[in-house]
Image 1: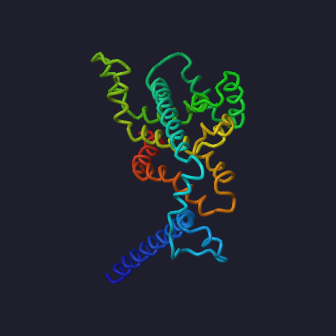
Image 2: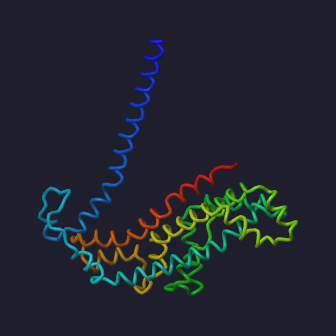
Length: 288
């Protein structure tokens, strides 16, 4: 009995130590990940003179100020950049969903000749370097005369092979019996998609939507390439404009304030939908 009790105690102690080590590691990792965000936020509340007087960076400020945030909207048309980005993000995400959802449904439920071959070719497109896609898109948009337009910004981003694949894997987890029963009842494919498949796969759809929103919000290369008109700048390109023609390269606190303002919407979106994102990724990555 004594040996049994001592063995149980040693196992409990070993599990506690293992669990403690995991928590310590995760805490250190969390600090390493979150520290840049903390320092960015802290710097945004420091005055220009206070920041430059620090020979050794301080992890606190005794005199926080909102002056940098006020200047962020005065030095450059940051509000216009925000509006452009919201329009670009909403339009691109909405059109993309209208394209990829029917495509994923077709690959997961409909039967037609060459479906496997077409889907394989779709997946092969993921192997093409993004640089080549950007070049061909730039030539096409330029020849169509769509530079410096929202259409030119949106058009190359309205589909994604990866998101089609993710939705297809999620749709395929729905039992075929539901589809056959719906067809017996005279339900059309479109009605079945809207009333059955999308509600069941809502976490995956939300995940795709949020990921696309983040992708659009952070888009830099394509908007920078396709427009040189400030009226069509997005917030990602506005950062460069702020740095060059707004505060200057040395006003780091003002730059950090601008970055905080630009990053805040994405942080809020992620915090709201974080559980749905994890659920959607798990559902799309597993086959039941």
